[in-house]
Amino acid sequence: MHSEIQDLARRLEQQLIAFERLHADELKRFQEQLATYQRLQNDELQMLRDELKQLKEESARLQAESAAPAIETPPQVPPSQVELTITRRDLLTGKLPSLNQRRV
Image 1: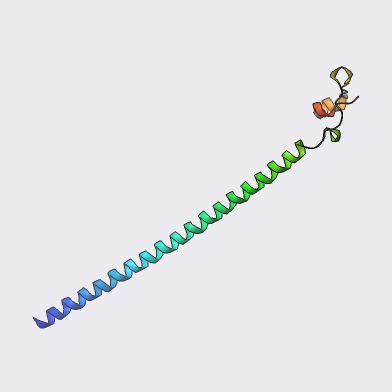
Image 2: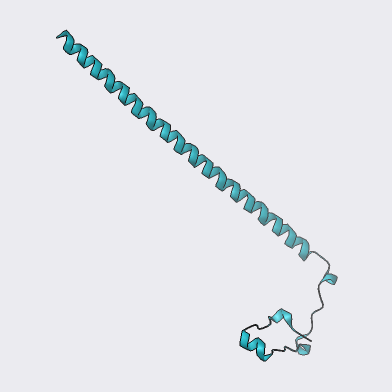
């Protein structure tokens, strides 16, 4: 009877050790996953911050360009004086000039 109790106590102790290891390993895996998610989240947040900074810089640049004096812009030719020349080669190759590339 005494040896049976010792065997049961030993088995119970082994089960407790196995249970503890299982949950310790599981907790460690969860901690690693959480750390990975935190790194990913921080990386995405940094990418968004960089993109926002870039958009702000571009917006400031565009505002500065639009606030520049009108002297810097080339004079507009009235539509009545515009002659748009398209060569046969342009038509065949599909290289049609845009409306901004008008020739006088």
